[in-house]
Image (cartoon, rainbow, N blue to C red; front, side, top):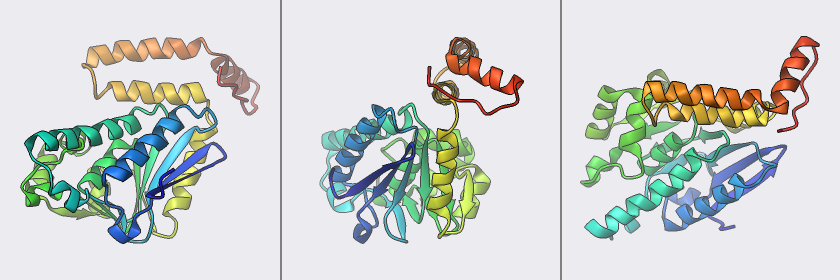
Length: 259
């Protein structure tokens, strides 16, 4: 594993930490490669049920792309540059396991896009969010123009992308970009505790919930309802469903088998 990120596994939880605090955890090619390797590994690790991703140091989750690397792009290489980041972030979004971004500081540009690729965003009260790419003469390229409107609505997405303005954690929470706010010293522990609570739930149902909710952003309403019914039916055929309902009737804690 590259030193630009760290990966720790414990109690069904993986914690991925961006580890370039001297560069405010900026996303360069090496970081993207390391994230690709880490999440590919996590996708096939049956012992890992949920993932938390955060940034090293007190200042930044990820303060965007590495500008020195970005500056070298031209039109053809710029398209490949964007597609590379999109592939990695799509891997995170489609991991099949809940991923929580514990945003501990600046989440700007690619860093904000990385947070948005996660299923939930918990933030420190000192966190800051923004898509400032317009100030560099470009647009967000790692999915920001697509995920931001789904999270905050079209009008606010236009405002944030066109202005390049930064917003604080309270504003981000009010807009729906952030799920929960915590004091800086509590953020990671609270994020891991929530991840552990999810990891204790029926695993097949957990992954099915992700699949069904993600369909809402991919297909029409009628197609989504069809998919929901199909996924619901699939979960009704599992041993965990029988165990969960039986445990409820018997007023005891369910014991999940993942079957």
